[in-house]
Amino acid sequence: MSSATPTSATPPARRLPLAGVLRLGRPSEIWFKPALSVVASIAPPALTLSALGRTDLVMYAMAGSLCALYAHNRPYAARAGVLARVVLGMLGGVTVALVAASLTGSAVVLVTVGALLAAAQKALCDATRVGPPGNVVLTFVSSASLFAPQTLGQVPGHLALTAATGAWAWLVCMAPALLRPHGPERRATAAALKAAAWYADTGGTGEGHARARAAGYAAVQAAWQSLLSTSAPSRTRRGLERLVVRAEVALAAPAEADAGRLRAWAGSLRGTGPVPRAGLPDAGVDELLGVDAARPLWARLGPLTPLAVRTALGCALAGYASLALGIGRPYWALVTAASLYQANLALTWSRAVQRVVGNVVGVLVFLAVVPLAHLGPVALVLCCLAFSFGAEVLISRNYWLGSVCVTPMALLITEFAGHQEPGALMTERVVDTVVGALVGFAAALAVTNRRTGDRVERALTAADRAREHAARLLAELDPGTAALQSARRGLAVALAELRATADAAAGEWRQRALPQERVVLAEQSGHRTLAATARRQGLLPDRDPASETEDARP
Image (cartoon, rainbow, N blue to C red; front, top):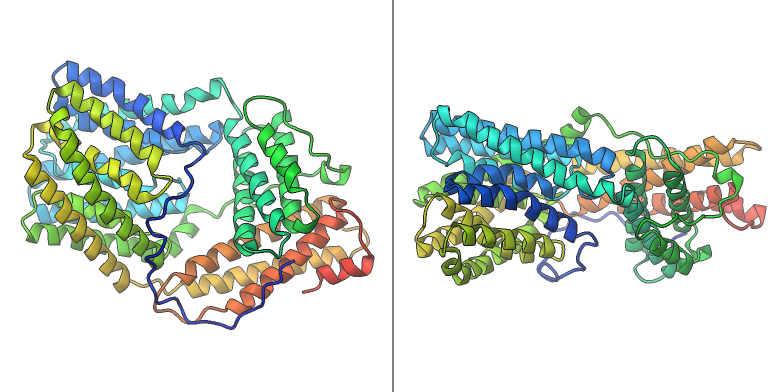
């Protein structure tokens, strides 16, 4: 299916990108959902506490309210569980932080606790694939709580406030289910159809076809995961499943796909209207099997060990460096380091540049709005609400742009405990940002991820086995509808995992040369087999049998 020419194994990338790091992308299609949810979650408790003259408690209320940023791409049945676990994770981090703050005043000990918490939060968020904003919000809240004056007697009350606002955030995020119960599944299916149409536009060989194909399979896999995480099958879900199958088929044979029809189907999924009929033959309707179940948590945590070590080391060293410079809020440097660590070193570098630029610009925004925030407690709360909304509007376009709003909001939160001198506050923030970025990135350079090559080899093996299994079924006279469907789905998932693993490995330093040629060959043969399998199922127009056999051959 692909005309790409295999390339020889190449050494790992050595250059760190600058071009495009600050380039703005398209906003998220659902940017308004987390933006409105976080405002609705923060406003009632924060304004109530301000009216009662207890602005010192707003930070603990915001800890639970910020859970409203999570799980907006999940179906409501799955969202309920994910949000509950996020609230419990937030509560656990705040508990450890507040107890530590009440038992010791040693800044070195508190930074150490914060670094270990950050590493645990990073590993768990990545392993459970909780999605944006990932560990950053959890680490921000727990790290700030470490340096809030505290006694053991105050801890239960502060935790109760965090738990109550977390429960309110859960209700806010679940409320849209009353109006559009299948909204997330519809959006995921529409995204898969649009991605498949994009690949179909290339015909499988045009400019940008490899990137479009990888995006298409990732979107299809996300759609299946969304559909399979819902409750009992319904007519709507069955209709959506058929559309995802159509997206898969378009990815398998882009030259034969109708991109316009795929986009029309995607557009019809807006609102609550009926799901369009995909027109699948009977062989493609009876057995709609999804992706395999995810690996157990412990199995997903193992490969994340280098990333967890990077996070712990980088956060600890960043906090210690801030203390050595005499900065009063070392948790800012700690959180900066924690926010950097991505799937590979190249992405970590990009995030470091974005973080520094966004924070510096955000400090200037804070200088402009601080006179307004000092008008009174209500004005302070309203400013925080405006910046929390703006952060969600902008952050999907580029991380640095969202940081322009996050930074003044974080600075304003310190005002709830009492007015701060703006000049000193701004200086500390800039210094801590630079220190956290430099030290955090240095830790990423020191702790390399040498397992990436092994993961590419395992992904190659899995893709080869999935292709061979599908090819064996194609050679049988009557392989069975369910078996062939399952083999096609398994091969599609294996190829998507192979591309994601290879992309992640390409951005790491100091590792053995990657088998790029084998990856390209495995993708080419795998996608030919996918097309042959779809044709055998009656999902594509018939072709000459000899041609079909050729498609299935590696």
